Every structure is written in structure tokens, then in C-alpha cells.
Length: 160
Image (cartoon, rainbow, N blue to C red; front, side):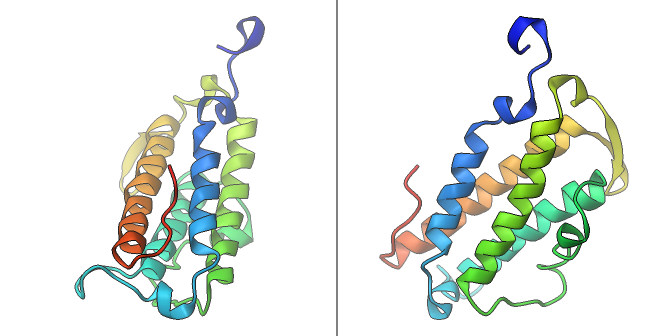
């Protein structure tokens, strides 16, 4: 519960997520195209591919899964599925910023009372709580891959 027994807004509940978002953007923004192509193994995704995957998944779950965001978010839903390849870090930074703005808008609007709302997504009924947590853990998992890849190549990784 928030102040005076009111339901808390989710931006308060998930306040650390914005810091994590900013750390990802800070890590990606200065990278060159060659650095975005770095991977820890030939059979694993590159830094750029991982970033595209994070952006695509965010857009899919919030836009397709819960009907949030507008055409800008909808356009990013298939970034990691249609062979799209950004040319530079600025395009990835924009993808992170667009998806975060849409997600932040939702988290600012929604309260803890909205967590139980259900959506039919990916062939199953899922609660808003499940979707939000899934996107957070997805960001953390793949953000860790970016951090590992940067560190393996002697580049600055997000400082958690």
C-alpha cells in the first residue's frame, strides 16, 4: 500500500528497474559497430543482438501482450525476429528509451490493485504481475549477458 492506505503506483514498487535501464543505456551508448558485434563465443549472440532481443521482448510483452504503447512500440515488437540489424549504438539507445518510456508510463499509471488483471498472451492467460516480472527478469538475464561480453573483451560493463 502507498500513502494513507492507497494502492502504491507500480513505478514505486519497481523503482530499481529505471536505474537498471539507465545502466544498460550507458553501457550500450558509446559502443562502435565493431564492439556491438562482439560475442563471448561464435555460437552466442553478439552485444547488439542481445540488446535487440531485450528491446523486442519488452515491446512484445507490453504492446502485444497487454495492448500498451502506440505505433512506435509496436514497430519494435519484431526487432529480434525479422533479421533487423541496427547500424549503431544510437539506434539501440533509442530502442531502449522508447520501450522504457512506454513501460514507465504504464508503471506510473498502474497501481498494485492492477497486478491481478489477466491477459491472454502467448497462448496462455497471464497476470499483469507475471508479465511485468517476466520482463524484469528477462532484462536482468540478458543485461547480464551484455555485461559478461563487455567484460570478456575488456570493455566497461554496467556497474551494478
